[in-house]
Image 1 (cartoon, protein in one colour):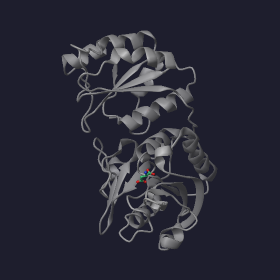
Image 2: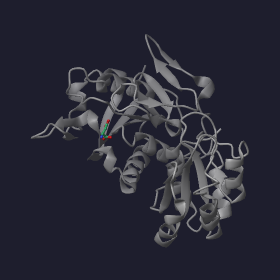
Image 3: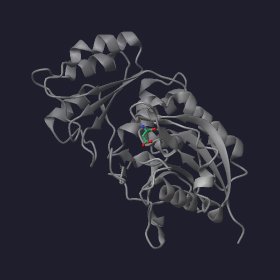
Image 4: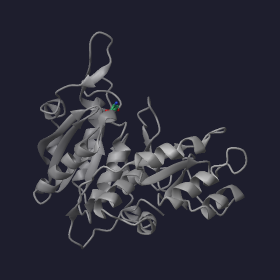
Length: 336
Ligand code: ASP
């Protein structure tokens, strides 16, 4: 059978890092030219070509980097059956979420991977992650995914959950899309259907998004004037569990009202990993809803931030009522 064409896009991350002097901290090195030398067996799985987007610790990921990866995919979309993006794990869930919006009506596998240990290390997880990702990239998977530790996740449902374990990612609110054991198993029931619409590509622009993480004693009122002065276009509140916020001492309700009255929508996500925000469950959620806050159901924080970037870029002068509506639309499987 003819081998599938897969494009490896290098962006950096631990996979290609080396120890720097004098204290052995990891920093980006030039591995992108030699991935295939380290893992030559990848060529048995697919006809591979490489592209270079950037070479950064993904903590430095910024919107122009995401646009570079997008344009690499766009200019090669017709010529390749699938894409593997080598990426740092720190912001992989953000970038995978962003691309799931940026490539609209995607029909091809776009698989992010990386590793917890550099490819040059003897006990590296990079080799297996690369092999599995390239194999998934040859399959009929019309999704932006993360492949890590023998598991395939929907990218915009994924969160980094471990700093030191090979099991670095989880998809708390959506079943895994595939797993690799002796055989490769695809969870077809939970894969997206292949779109029949034309694929379109959307660059992201920068928009100022405010974030508030609640903790007992937090005084929101001190920060809202600064946020409004800085020109925030939306605020995301990481609230407790089902979306609950303080309504007694240090009530956040006047702050939510001030933001919504200033036409800055307030979106609520949960500090809990599993489950869905429901502002009707408790008085502490309902008061937030009455003040104008919108519960983001089971979207990850990463999906919410990148969806906001996407919507602000796609609809430049979007009205807050339309933004609120669009945020709850399911664009690429990011919300139940
Ligand atoms: N700091 C690294 C990065 O995100 C961590 C990793 O790749 O695992 O680029």
